[in-house]
Amino acid sequence: MDVSIITNVAAASKPSHGFFDTTAGQVGVCYGEMGNNLPSNSEAVDMFKRNNIRRIRMYDVNPNALNALRGSNIELILDIPNHKIDGIANNPMEATKWVRDNVESYNDVTFKYISVGNELKPRDLVGKETILIQAMQNIDKALSDARLSNIKVSTTTYMGAFTGTYPPSNGRFNATYLNFLQQAIDFLAEKQSPLLVNIYTYFGYIQNPKDIPLEFALFKPTKGFIDDNNKLPYQNLFDANLDSVYAALEKSRGGSLEVVVSRAVGPREARKPITTYIFAMFDENDKPDAETEKYFGMFRPTDKKLKYGVNFLISTNLLGETS
Image 1 (cartoon, rainbow, N blue to C red):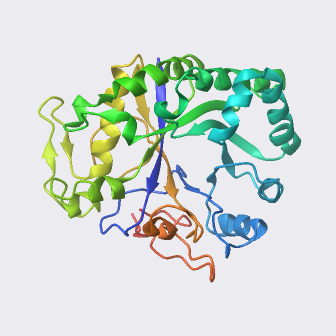
Image 2: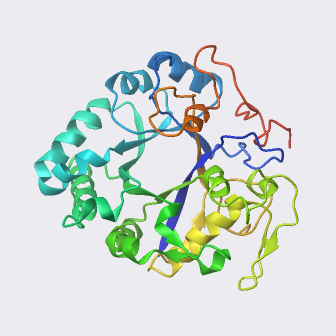
């Protein structure tokens, strides 16, 4: 039973050591639109094309963006927002309508995955713990009925769902999250669909700066550590977080896990590469959370200039260094 992991990486700071290799085309971007000065959707799609960005994630349906993506062959992860899950879970016809309006109507858009929810929290779903799996099943059935079974259904979780992540081999789901997510994990394994995981090393560092060296979080050269249980070396926080997710899934009927991102160094090298979506495409000045979250973009929205060195155009690593 194989479960793949797709990660979303917040790149708030420019790493000083090349990490993601874009040669395999496994690196995409998260395309958020919480800003009042963003390029138009057609301009954004033109930027994806010019920069050889072949995979994007959108957090909600935007007809203008979907129309701009027509015929582009850019692979899309499309989210169903958390507030829409209840209706889809409790009414299969709502799932059918959602698929018809937002997927079938755009038959020349390359949908890759539908993510049912983003970072759902059990405390927000007391008395409605089954709506996630019900919504996933209903969307999957609607896609199948529309002869679109090639589009996989998933959900997105985050590092807050895990505990015991140091050393990575000790990683496991928080008991409350496991009770909530176990049926979804079983569904993903049965359908051979990936699990989407938001891994934000930036937040991992700022929440625990005493125990996590800055160099370890920024992919700078560091001696790192060796996990005494699996004997694997870890030179950066991303690898450590990721392998703790693997460990948790292996303890939760997740089976053997495949990694999907070409990377220069690190453990689990024998596995397949990980598909990674960098958060985010643009700075978003209307984001309601911490001020820092408004500046995670790779590109400035006003002049469309690249802020740090991700080069999707040639055989490079994350810094644009030729490999």
